[in-house]
Amino acid sequence: MPHHLIRKLGRYVHLPPEDEAVLARLVHEAAWIGPGRDLLQEGAAAKAVWAVLEGWACLYKQLEDGRRHITAYLLPGDLCGAPIDCPSPVNYAIGTLTPVRAARIPGPILLAAMESHPSIRRAVWLDMLATSAIQREWTANIGFRTARERIAHLFCEIVSRLQAVGLADETGCLLPLTQEDLGETVGISTVHVNRTLQELRQAGLITLRRQRLGIPDVAALRKVACFDDVYLRPLSSGSDRDRGTVRRSEAEPVVGSEAATQNIIA
Image (cartoon, rainbow, N blue to C red; front, side):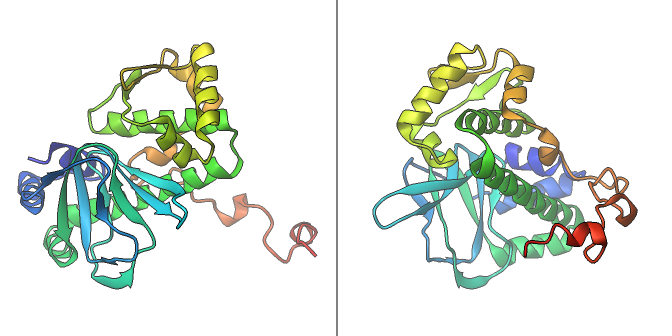
């Protein structure tokens, strides 16, 4: 039973037993893949969705000279890809960071399951929206946070995501990442990663022992990271304000008003 996948998708909508059984069948051929292997190579056609059931994988871009940037982590319960048969080559690769148990679900098969099971369909689409929200936060992390804030924010996010599938509590989690991995994720050198981790340790904000991240003071680390986990919470059908929608009357002046046109770059 793909416990982590069901638990994650079940956060978005209620999944009846028959839907859980469908998800179990979709990943029944899951296999273990060793670390440092590619599940999908850049330039290949994306004709399937990968489901990570155990272990850690990542999306990454790599230049010809070997430099790599990790653009996303795939944790237990995560899906990667869209349930459509897209012949266009992908501009990323999926690689394993640890031994990973993963299943390749052909797009048409997942799409058929979604069409015949509305709860699965809604859960998968909401999960894709959540993945997009995480990607935007990673972009912001690289764009304007300091090295200290970047790593602190990443740690807060990892713990929150693993909590959602029962693999962590607020005080910490397994962290099978190297300093090189962290540098390739937050866009700083390995030397800078080492220095930043030492600063966080000395400030009493984290502990790192035997690939386990400890967070002695959750509130303090979140404050340093300017971390707000609202983007990680399951989407629900609330009011416009609950969903973050801003009404026109509450927004800034629209383009064309005197106040707005004063801020247009000449």
